Image 1 (cartoon, helix red, strand yellow):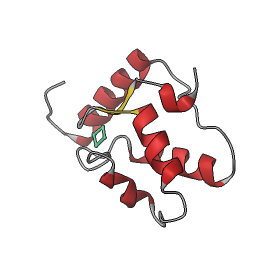
Image 2 (tube, protein in one colour):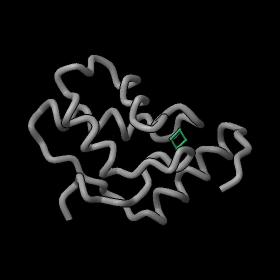
Image 3 (cartoon, protein in one colour):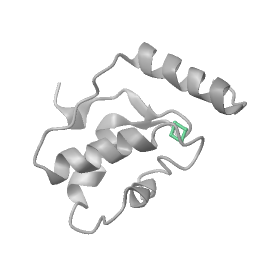
Image 4 (cartoon, protein in one colour):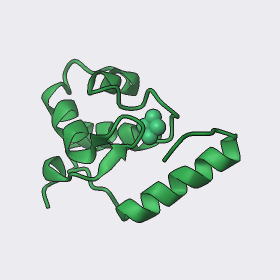
Length: 94
Ligand code: FES
């Protein structure tokens, strides 16, 4: 699957898919100077903060000319987010 067609949610807080973030970042790569600017893609990264390192990796991959990919299953990603919330004391409905 092409990364920009990947419909797994990368920002679960705002239901933003991996593909949407890749498309947005690719289309705006010249303008984007910091990962926080990716939040203009449907609010990605502005909730619990779990996905921010993954948004950063997409940005860095595209800058380096590497096709971004989601390296874990959607289930594993969700579980790791839950673990992160528990560790950080964040209470969110999932
Ligand atoms: S998963 Fe993106 S901010 Fe919570």
